[in-house]
Image (tube, rainbow, N blue to C red; front, side, top):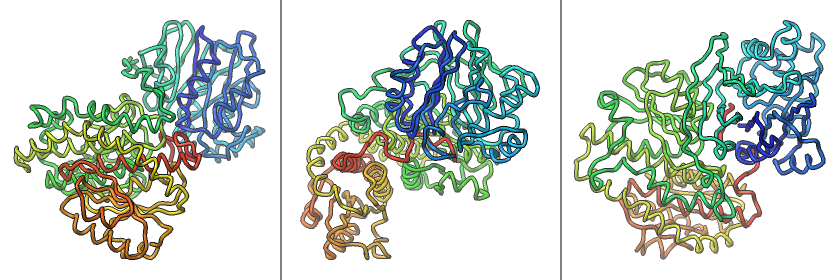
Length: 614
C-alpha cells in the first residue's frame, strides 16, 4: 500500500521524485523519504514522518544534486510511523538503499539469522531485514547487486515491490516485484520506476509492467533488462499509456473527492460507450461475447471483492440473480481465500478491484483459476495484476481515482455489473428483448440523471451543517438499496470518522432499533420500488422513537416526505438502476460533513487507496 518512485536520467532527480511522491500519496502518507546518488559517490538518504510536504520542508537545506534516485511514501505495516521506520532503509555498510511496498512474512526468521551473523538493526520494519539480507549475500558471495537481490528474493516469503540503489554503481537501479505493483516508464535517455504510471505520465507514454517474479535492471545508457528469479531473461512488453495529466489534477475543485463525484456524468458515459448499442436494444460486452459457452453453461457465480467493491458485488448478486437466474454468492476476498472454497469448471468467479492490485482479491482470483473456475476480472487499471491473472474481464474506464474514498469507481463498478447481468441475460434468453431495451434506453440517460442529482449539492451542503457533530449514524435500505446503505455508511466512516452502520431496513427491529433516539440520525434510502411500502413502515418505526430522518426518495414522493425531517429527491427510473443514482447524495453528504469537521477527505487517517498487503 506504499508508493515507490525511481528515476535515472538527466532531469532534476529530486523534483521528479517529489512530484511522483505527491502523485502516489493516496497509497500512504504516514512518512516519506528518498535516496539520492550523485557523481560525487555519496548516497544521501532523507526521510521524515508525515506527509510528503514534511519531507520537502526537511530537504530545503540539504544537498539534492543527483543522477539517480529512489523515493517512498509509506502506509505503515511493521513499525509505527516515524523518521526511523520511514523508507529508504540503508544496509549496515551504508552502501545500499532500498524502498519496499509489501510485507515480508518470514522477516522474523531472516532477522534472527542475520543477527546471529552480527547484523544490527535500527528500525522495526521488515524492509530493513531485506536490505540487510541483500548486503549480507553480496558480501558473502562477492557478487553483483542484481545477483544478491535475486538470491535474497529466493529466500523471501511474502509480497514485495522493491527498488535498490548501490553506492558503488550510481548508474543503476535494481527493481523487482511479487504480488505488489511496479511499472517502468521508458523515456528519451531517462527511465522511471513507480507503483503505478501516474508519476511519469507527463514524461513518457511508454510503460513496461513487471510480472510476478521478475527483476528489472535499469542502467543509464543501456536498454532495460528484465530477469526472472531463475536468472533467465523475460520478454519486454511495452504498453502505451492512456492517462493524461488533466486526470491527475484537481481541475479547480478543492479536493479530488469532490472532483471525482462531479466527474460521474462523464465517467459513466465513458463506461457505457460502445457497450449499450442500437439505441439501448442490445448489450455488447467483449468479455462475455468471447466466452459465450462459459456463461451459457455456468451453474453458479461467485463474486469476490473487498471494501467498496464488496458493496458493488452485493448489487451484482441482485442484478445477476434477477436478470440471469443464476445463483450468486458474494464473498469477502480475504475470507474466501482461507475458507477452503469448493469450485469446479462450471463456476464463474468475478473478481472486483478498482486498482486491480488488491492483495486479497488477487490471491482469491489465483486460487479460483487453480481450482478450474473461469475467472472474470472487473478493474479500473489497465495493465494491473487482476486483468492479467484472469481469463476475461471488463475495464471500468472511469479514469484514475485519486481520492481514497471511492466514488466514481463505485458507480462504474455497479454500471459494469449491470451491463454484465444484462449481457448474460441477453445471451441466456432469461429476459425478453423489450425488457432489455427498456433498461438499455434508461442506461443511456443515466449521465443526465446524475447531472440532475448533482444539482442537490448546495442543499446537501446546507443539510450537512445540521448533522456534522452527530456521533453515530444508521443507514437503512431494502433490496437494491441495502448495499447502497452499506456504502453510504462506509463513506461517512472513512472520511469523517463518525461511527455509522448500514443495515437491511427489516433487520432494524432485530436489534439496532434500540439505538434510535433524537441524537442518532437515520439515513433511509427509499426510492419508489417494489419494496416501497415496506420501507415506509421502517421510516414510521424510526420516527415513532424520536429519530431524525434523512430520506432519499423518488421525485414526487408524498408519503415519506410527510414523515422524514429532510428529503433528497432523485429521478424515477427502473429499480435495477436506482443504486447508481441514490449513492451520489450519500457521497456528497459524507464529503460535506467531513469538510465541516476539518478532515482531510482525500487522505483520511490510517487508510490507503490500494490495499496491496494483507
